[in-house]
Image 1 (cartoon, rainbow, N blue to C red):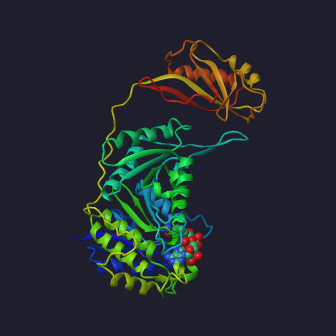
Image 2 (cartoon, helix red, strand yellow):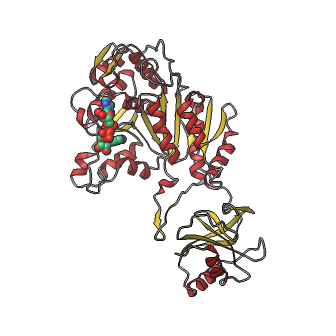
Image 3 (cartoon, rainbow, N blue to C red):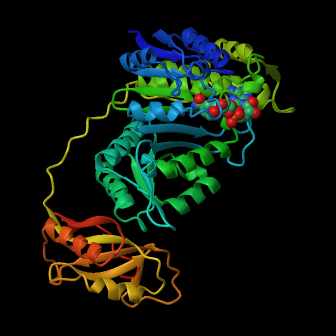
Length: 480
Ligand code: NAD
């Protein structure tokens, strides 16, 4: 049965590499019905700052599967990145980037690398919630949600199962961010138990990234949060030696978008020299996503064979390694000619049963019992001696809420701080009931804030301290 997809030919080299990609898909027998839309430079320049017209959105939302060539984002003029808009608007929570070495045909220091990075795509520091709070300090909120973690972890494990991969590694920094990254790791541990055939492990992001750059062959699938994934997916693509060949998938609960990693390369546009491989790899991921994985594998193997045979476009042509320098169209022809063949030196790809990956919709848990046990009051104060601030704030105490700690950039500076600790003008002042573990009412916080205002304390924000089912929902101060 044919799947209806939306195709955008893009800008620069986009139309050439899309034509080459679609030709290979057609010759391989992909069952697709194509609706074309226009996005990118011409749309931007017609005065639409998002680069996409409302009718094009309708087509994308109706078809749910979107194969997108790179576009040119005009400089300045308030033009918004279409990629970011598309990811967020369509809820494309997962970014999947396979990074595989093609040694000895493409030069790399890591001949045995074959890693897939599964990056959470919607939350973390990319929520873009930032506030300047004092003269010296600006805050960016890192939001990690249980649904966000469950969806991405489940996708990574389902992907591993579908692609017959053996191991999934979780990268986080839960030794420092015990609540946010702690949740990511906890969800990974929970859900991994549902996939007993897949080996799982966890790495602290810094050493994990170092090992990925140094010994990538120890990894198979890596799942991680947005910022870490953004960084390590570029590192991983780069060290395969073939960043120009990579494709990526952006998957949501309802829609998905597939593309090349690279941009529109305006200087080489229209010259029939661009390499269509990145977009072709995006398309191979698309075929797997829509349940035509066997055709995707057929194309992938023909492509590997083309690379092995030394039929290379300009960007990957190396004297001694390459045999035939070809243009965009001739490269696509070479892949078509090899459909049905498998590589001789490189490992052929074996894609599962070609079933589409289906993630169960998120089911909300029973709400936890939530108890208010204190408040962190953030204060803008230009003094330097935390003892003076402690003395000032101690005057606000009552039995329901009294000052227990002040931190500066997370380090406890009162009571009993070190004179060596550098302090900014941004202070987190924790108030809890005098009686340990007592529960307070929200109005106690309002009354504390009133006392603070009366005492000329510059309160910039508050964060409530909760227990969820008796478990602490906030971090301790470093050194507390
Ligand atoms: P680029 O990826 O277009 O080009 C970087 C270098 O790689 C250039 O030397 C280019 O010639 C080469 N290159 C890229 N793709 C190639 C291919 N398929 N075959 C051969 N060589 C290739 O990055 P850039 O120059 O920074 O950006 C150009 C435009 O692309 C900008 O307007 C940028 O905003 C846009 N862009 C779009 C996307 C997207 O649509 N997903 C992604 C990145 C950049």
